[in-house]
Length: 299
Image (cartoon, rainbow, N blue to C red; front, side, top):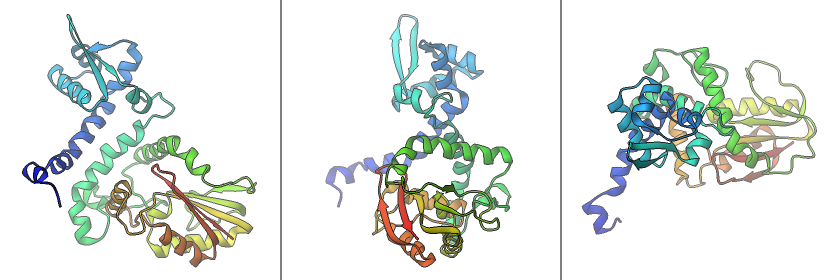
């Protein structure tokens, strides 16, 4: 039970209700190029200067910048000339387009696609199916189980996935000793229809969560058949706790799978069961403590 203070003023409820507002402030600052401009300028700038450079309204930009200061995405210095803004270190590293660790593309995909789909979350829960058609009037799918309004949107999604990999990939690939595998195939494309080449290790990165159990079994059986004896498959997914109590990020990703695809996030035991059904054994699980975890099954 919550404390008396929590019941008198529900701080956590207030924070949660403002969650989408916080996201949209960050997305908007990225989209308008605030962080890129401040990086390129090499010096702090006033809100009027930023608005002029970016073709924005001065009043609106001032409020956006102040909100970013409150979110610790910018810092502000008060001078005789007025307020001057600069990036925080975390914004320079993760929110500018030119940074090797930039998360700009995934931010834009969330802002322009995911954000709109989630307006229909209640419908997704009622119906148990994705809401892409309701959100955008499109029902066609790509081979990955996701849906896109255009090739441009698909490229933004792929760029976004690569950006997330830039901060999580090293931990996933270091989860197990993969040195015995000399022939590695990163599975992608229309894997349900195209043939899968023979290899010693197959990497399925954020693929199975797009599909229901039957489709996952179908794909893993196909991989098992192509896999060389002694080889294996490495699943890169965000793992739920066995009692489904968290992590909260993975729970939210699973809700997103409901809204956008026909899949879900799973526990390590659930992925192990899928691998065993396809014939894989000696299954190992490694949680990285970041967005994505690793499950290795051997043939």
